[in-house]
Length: 275
Length: 292
Ligand SMILES: Nc1ncnc2c1ncn2[C@@H]1O[C@H](COP(=O)(O)OP(=O)(O)O)[C@@H](O)[C@H]1O
Ligand SMILES: [Mg+2]
Image (cartoon, rainbow over all chains, first blue to last red; front, top):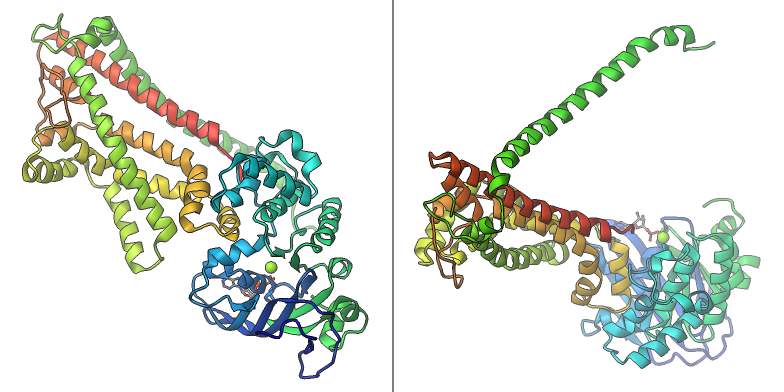
């Protein structure tokens, strides 16, 4: 767990070892031999993945292959599902998130999540963004005001809502709601942002705005984004992992996976032969 | 080749339409019947009681002389009863609902509790009267006090509040809980700041309906032995008291026609209270009705 700063070897599954020279980047999440079961259903099989700082990592694959399961494991949201069992390890900044001593609340203040369907609270825009800081004990109105403004600006929605901060968030359009949810997530000043198909419920223009936003956000955050849209993965991500039936088939630079995939199944998937 | 013969379809159109109209009228008549009975009832009560309904009626103590008799003790008693039932039944009921919906694991034990709560809602109210008599009036020696009756009534309406609150809590979308948990909120913070605010309209509506049930119930109070005639007001929850339905029951049992009219006037007061409470429930529901 100590050697995160040194040059890394990216092991491509299938045993075939390729040396890829990496820049000196910190590993945020190191997934080691992760298995996950929903009761009897073996949903994730021997997952090994390294997520780097200030990068966008895309997770692609046909529906039901375990993308959501994996991303929800990263902040342990998966534990809300009864009967889930895991084995293996996920280290976040060097510390195993499954450790007994690791509180989920602590983990989730570092790892924000944006969901598939925009899910603002039935509260005002202001209260939505201030929710996270408030539950973490920030009461000072001036600081809250600053956080709200900074987060809404960070999510590129400030100009659209600054005159109606105290109106109900349900009055916003779907695309605005999703950016509000991103702002709400930024408000707890996370380290990593998990996004599970954040644009699948949005129109093309809103999708574009969210994609641009992701590019902007990666300067400050590490982003893991699930998408079933391969063009989106190609446009916005630095690395891409291809999941199939609960396994990682290929995980490498986005450019490479879309130009010269090394596995036949990856090629079939990205050329649209299945999925 | 066509499988449907359109000329024959048209020929059979008429009987179908007739049957359609027949059932429409039948159901309309059924609705009308209920309304009619309610109308007759209200008409009778109002024509009989309205003459006696004035401020003096509301402000006088009961009396053997009908022209002096009033409903003050019963009205004040009903308000005392509500003041005891509302906090007890709401806190127990909402607490139970939160536990069952948010904390309890879904297993045999919790489904056993769930079934029994539903069964409890169907238990005749007089049985709750017997329970109250045994436990609160006798074993705890509370006598026929506001507290004894309030506790009995709280138990009676508890299942209604639990079920209504559970439904309200369950209707809060799980996406909202996920959003809250996803930011590192604890379960308790999520319940207080997300689940309850979204569920409160449903909980209040259920609570008010339960309370209006409590002020209309008579049978358990008869079993508890509440006085039919009481010429003083309770000063604390440990005092004797009586309520509107008991007072009405008392008056209807007397032979003189004036007392029958007083009973009608008492019924009007009770009905007005119920209508006000139900309207508040409807208002709350409409005001907070949110689309998730
Ligand atoms: N809550 C759940 N309970 C049981 N099985 C589930 C649950 N969620 C997902 N699964 C199963 O896990 C597998 C992966 O699902 P998921 O991670 O949602 O796929 P994806 O997001 O890639 O479409 C599927 O076989 C699905 O049926
Ligand atoms: Mg999914």
